[in-house]
Length: 303
Picture 1 (tube, rainbow, N blue to C red):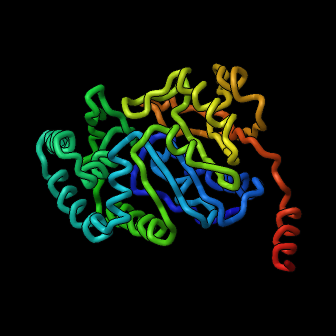
Picture 2 (picture 1 turned 180 degrees about the horizontal axis):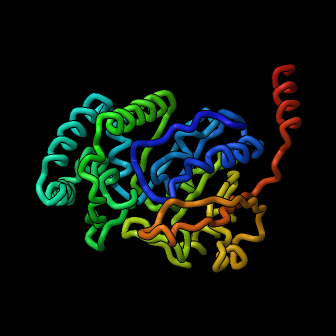
């Protein structure tokens, strides 16, 4: 299945944009009904959930309060396309004319965000920070340096972001969404038989920030939660790269079904650190074929 992928306005390294179709094909082969409920405990940018083919309720969470606040404000109409355009246009003009090649203004916005946690400042920082990274220090403060591109908020770029805001807001308003700033266990334990859980936790040994730190104890806890759920689940993780394998696969996950796919991440401070990786989808069901899915629809229509 190849469909249009809606890209969220929040930018972050490791976003699953290019893997959405792969994940959706597995969702559709899971055997859950199209009106099944979607549970996502590691929401992040939300690119997978916002492109889900399901039509039920969407119950999502993340430990990063800024992500949850931004999407809640979109849902409640506090943020919209027009407001985002006005904000980014003003910020872009100031940035382009600022001294120190724009760094002083970036620092001003960063300090304001760390005091006030404005969702608009959050989008600015995620777009003006180095390499689209999202990282916070031990105090929960934004901790990414400036990308040193003062003219990055040109009119076409602002329009692109605003169109993303509009599209995602439309998706949120078209389905019943609930956003939670909670630990992943709370979302997973809400799901039951007939539901599907999609998990994209921080990758063990690869990426950590202070809202989404990840240890082996976390991986083991997630394993036990998913092993005991009555819902169907899909877990995204990394399988191996040219240098090493993900030891968590053999230690915990190889008792489930696994699919793999080569993927290249455009992340890392240096070009030589941006390498391909083999992604894995781990799941607890036997996929149904497209023909079986069609037959299921025929039988439902007949009865």
